[in-house]
Length: 478
Image (tube, rainbow, N blue to C red; front, side, top):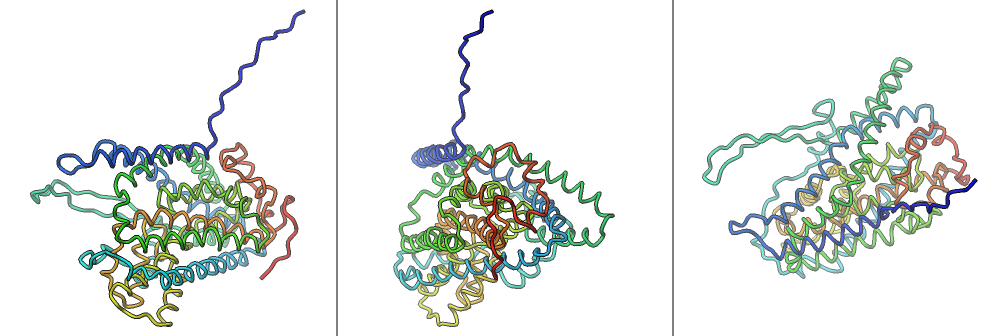
């Protein structure tokens, strides 16, 4: 009897997710510069390559954003149901908000310090004619009224007239948007109501869990398109904005990115180290969400991936992460709501020759720590900036001075936002002794695509109330 000696075929493995993203970044930069070199068409319309890159990038972000409303609602309701009977649920929420405030305060202090040191409003060549009223603004009343859902799902519709160059009406355009903060509030209320109803709510909670599982499966099909979306997003950014606009505001842009680097590479590592967590392990686990945030410029668009890496790579229990990460995506904005408005307010005051006193700097800190929910994960930080300027009584026309380079700054701001949104749940989970340290210490970018989704997501709430086997016992700290 003879045995077969035919050689076994080796299957070609696709490059890792991180390699795919990095390759897409490089290729996107090259295509963006190519599109920029081609220039505009004869009628100042974008060239074909720019349109293609823009379409690819915007389509990917639209797919991600489409999953956000059902994901946030079902995840929050499920997390509240999982946390019922858990003695430290209120403590977890309080610790989360406390660490949001601590890191925001450190970030705004860095922003104020850099503004006073680098004086971006004086060291600029931008002209006063660039000042203009912002297209939208924020106020404390808008923020407070925005907490109340306009409907059950927090959805909003808008309509606008489409006109030709001659002014003729061509039709009516409509769009559907959502306010994730309102969805969060509604989900919290529904989840608490379901707990109060008791056993009668079990069929609803069962359907909610099934819907959440389906949404998560759809979501990861979309996430696998991230390299393609990255190529389009970074290529569009370079083709559309280039870097020429940075020259007049170079000092301000430099101050913003220095501040972001200090938060990412100094503040966050210090927080991790003081809580006994490895710095490189954190960034290795959170990297997929950070890099997607950089190119997408949207905390909400990145929310599904942020929650994924927080649970799967960093070892935060799903029952807690599904509450803390969506909350962070709406209120945890160290880049857009702390560093940037502090620097921008100082820039505007210096540009218009207005003196700021100690009380003004304290107001900047207060607005940055308390009012960051006003940004609600939107692309850009105009709402938060106008809220800060109006609170200080500074000219809102100063916003127009900074709009030219806002997209370039927004990439770094959003990456910092998302890093903080993953950091705080990880730190709180470690302090409360519920972090899966084995998973945290073995984190890598590929864990988000492993096949143990159902097993990990189905972990019972005792992982939150008790101690996971892989975690080292940690005393609860105030």
